[in-house]
Length: 332
Image (tube, rainbow, N blue to C red; front, side, top):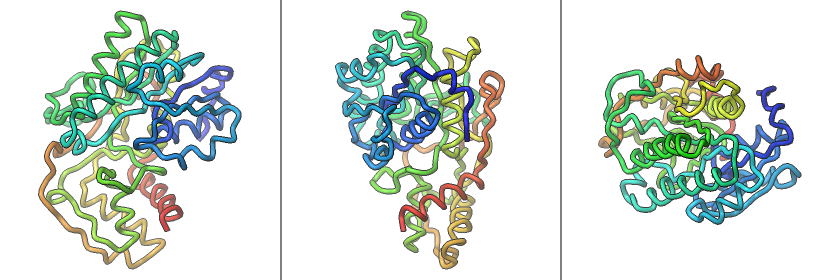
């Protein structure tokens, strides 16, 4: 997908924190393809070096190995930068429940360091990864940006605090920000390994090996699964919008449809079957629901459509098809 609006950023420098991660590396790929100078800040705690290996030979790419928990690293990364796409965070609700202190250090203290560094470097705009977890125990569907509940996990608290800090930095220091509440993002380069792997890459890896995926609960829980290209589109719209009314707020980043976990498993099996018909016979297993999980999630994307002209191109079926093809070629 091409983004002609990025032509306006030629000659500018964009910092992508967490650039070796799943979302960050996809953003960098698109920015470099449009001739934009990119600085990547990553400590490789969850990001992978292979995600950025293709960029190392590009003269527009600069890698800074550093940690957002260290203000001096943030200051170095923001030097001579015009825009920030802040993706660095420690994700996963279960991880935050197991280790709330580290999650807080990275997601709140690290976020504050980045805001301070961006302010001091006189960055034009700070676009950051927020989270649908901010909706917490608010049950109404679809989720609308200005109505949230109480957080259900340490991770959710940290992402809500990010929004509060961003708002204060605009009001106090004049730093323009946009928060993007991601809803269950998936796609190429999302890590299928580790204790906190997201459901789609984990299930794909297991199905390719003819291992039974395990669904938490009866499979009726539903999510607004959002393909990576839709997320890239929103970041670029947030980065380049000239609509002043679109700044200093938060947006849902989703497709606007929900899929149950049972439906997801079926979609994955059907799309993987084009490569291996035996995958259709792999059984799905179940276990108890997970602490901190909300039953259902569905985003209203009206605000993003109205203020940023967001037009997501990938529904769940088209996104799964693209993701499964990538995983088949990279996991086999």
